[in-house]
Length: 511
Image (cartoon, rainbow, N blue to C red; front, side, top):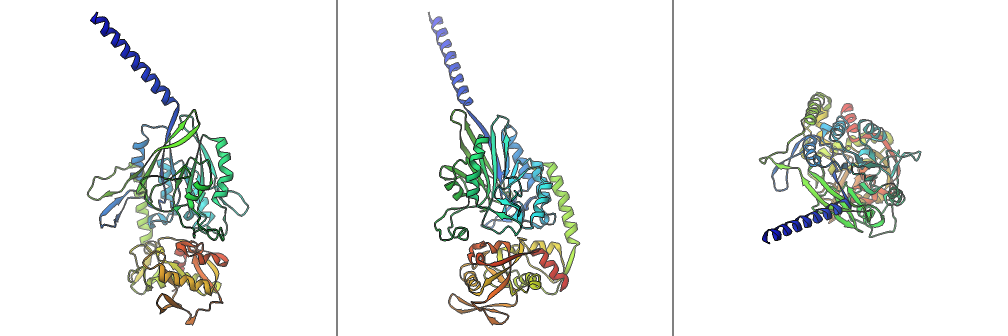
């Protein structure tokens, strides 16, 4: 009797267990998962480097060899994954800059990136630069809203990747409309582009990912030049999510912020992985086979920085060997490349006052613009390499690459005295101690007239508010960078065809 009872209970247990396993198996077969690993704003940091945190702690930041080591661990047990970058892998450390960011692309090739969005800095040196990137990269660079003068896409607008589980994932790129990308680039609104493209992608794919270099921010003034008279607009990826239906995930860059959880706008998740390779974003996506809906199941910002005394990340030895080769070549090339002579020592400039080094920098820009009869040159403090200056003696390429943080193209533009006066007042009153503080060529003198009002003398003459001035300025500022919307009223803007580095080299060679 007891034996029969035990046997009955055991059979019932086995039956319940079998049913439970069958139910779980059925549930799992209703959904498909895949992982997206993502980065953004790498900015030429292909090797491990050190920095000091706000609380004075020295930390090690990873290069591509460390990033590769972590990525290999994360994908080792998952064949359904994508590795994506949201733009601005250029405009960074001089060791990368001298190779036109070839080592960064080579490292990304070795990691196995599937796609990268075109950031605004990828256009810093014109379309010949973009063509070079495309030659080097084994992965497609994406931008659906940038076109050449013939109306053709500069790079691919999108790709569709088929994962091992059969899911078709459409990935399309967008580039910020907040900056002038050059006279050879036609830039279209990312919202209108997406409204036209996303429905087509939904017909072709199970999942639609927007890989964007737009920025996560809310500042209604940033796009006023594109939408005159409209205020209170969300901008960047928030506006994209707010106004465009059908995007399953927005992977963003450009705003250089660390977040611990996604932004959710109009039920669309937006994620970003800080900057400089210090964070790796990991998104787990889930596709429901019955409803054909996609959701972000979980997201994590994986910090890759380490305090110097903590255990360090491992490295991918193959990538590290390539990195070491580039570093040796960089050290030899730029240390031995003397471009001119500097006759004085400059103090390290601070971002709330004019400086001799700032004038030296601006004078080089002014010298480049002199053949166009420029009246003055100006640039933003954030263009200077942090904590770097010039000493007297021979000047090498290494010195200049340290000095010039953002090597934007130089433009010549015409601007009214009134707009220029407003720009100077904004710099002196609102941009003190920020990267937006402006520095000027030696022929410009700024004097305090009264509290919060400043006189401007150009060639020892007081500024004429009704006069049109020719200015040499960067492609960053001309589109309203650092909130200087007055620059967007400039007219007759031409690309000089030189970068900041080019202007400094010429200036030193001819001194």
